[in-house]
Image 1 (cartoon, rainbow, N blue to C red):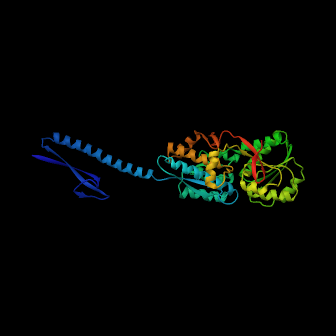
Image 2 (cartoon, helix red, strand yellow):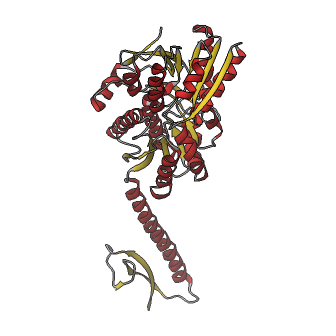
Image 3 (cartoon, rainbow, N blue to C red):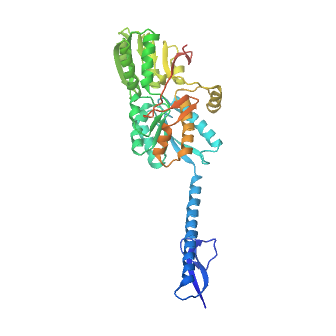
Length: 416
């Protein structure tokens, strides 16, 4: 006499079966045909074996299903954010920075993307001000759910939105923010652009040793960048033995500098150190000419803006410091094909390199664990179009080299 042990399991609908069950699966029955034996003997043993086999089959099908879902998800684009001044103050820089990011993204995707997934960037306008940058970051973090933001350019932008990003464990990778206080932002903050702890010191040494200035007046924008670089400059200039005759600050959105410039003109300084954003710079230098201010001026890296060069040529002896970036002819050609000009203003090569670094890092550690992304970034050593990039414990680049440019005839050329 025979007994039938019927063991039921659920299989995908592609399997033949006799009974429908919910959730897109069907019931199947496996039988074992064994002669009956007293006390259960071999029949019980066979039944146990079939149970084990079925558990393995069902478990495999479940894992197969999950694996298939994971593979489908893994084909979706990897989305990251961008914040920079696309309109308003410094937009003539920010739009070129964006073009550099687009170039790099195109190259990454043409080479196969990141683990077979395309890279997409969601661009948000930081407008070089705190409110716009915070609004942009809130969208990227809370709506778009990006794991990483490339930005901002202006220190005002980055200082405003970075705290929220740190709290949300979203990586911030700036291509142009240089305020010294950003070094203490947090574990998930990085910048491929050097801190003004370097630039302010360089400016002081250049003014004192190269230009022979022993008495300076300082006019600056009250902002994370302007105040930060001013403080470093003043500290180092005094340490060299120089005298700071005045420190005159104005809001970033100020457009009337006549009172400040009149005061500074009467001090007979050897040099005016003037770290200011583009729109304010253009207004102030025009007013300085009207007031007869003839003192040589030294600006900061934000003056590396084509809009300034074309607007203030002929308005005095105008110099500025900027990080040295060995821009290759190949990169210039790519940029010209993209924008119509080979001009690579401040932050352009850094923005391009940031994308390339991000693509390497995410290919190694994925996008789901911000701690792994931060650790991999911190261990990065990369040679790109902006030069060598490696980071210290604060996410700052470890070295910086600067040059000085002179504005004349609608452009800026390096001072040898």
